[in-house]
Image 1 (spheres, one colour):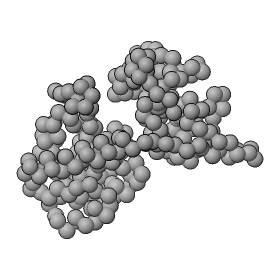
Image 2: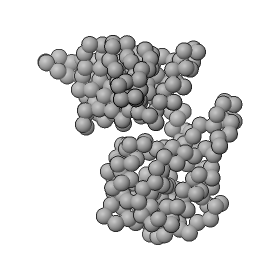
Image 3: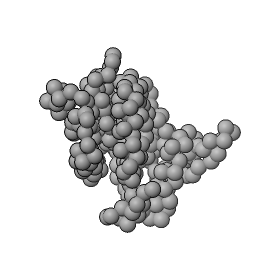
Length: 258
């Protein structure tokens, strides 16, 4: 169970965590350690590199415990495939110390050498929590987007954006009745936009919170997000509570402007 946040006095903020290891016993040991910490939320566990890439992109964890040696797609392949979508804290886990230098060159925060004890795991976890906390407090400033179409150049600021949707490797940025195709993934936008102003409601959409009119159950029994322009967007179940919390805070005067 979550305890209180020492700074805010509110509920403890959970850190989405993923465990990747092709050996079931090692994966099980790591998940036990993760579940032991009230601040960690186990968002997924994967037994192969290929599954890890898809899973990490789907659940967007902040912390990943990543095995190095896996058949066909190893830990380094996973990081290379994720590229800019890699989580802020990666802890490599392996039985071989020969990969240490390469791991840090690849951007790993720490390197757990099997077998490790609880104290060593806790040291890695402390470093990961510090890295994630620092990443949260870095101001997010998205410069104006430069959109070129029909022989003209348009500048779009974050304050003008109503919502964004994924379009393969591109994103479609909606501004009033217009939309602009931008060569940038939705994951990149999510990292760059202010999380107090924009919220990812689904793997396919990010909305500006003050453009949301409310939520409504659709014919399938799921919730849609109703936007000010009359647009209905799907809301994933896993994001429903978080969106509700955001909207309640905004209604109580806790929102902020870009």
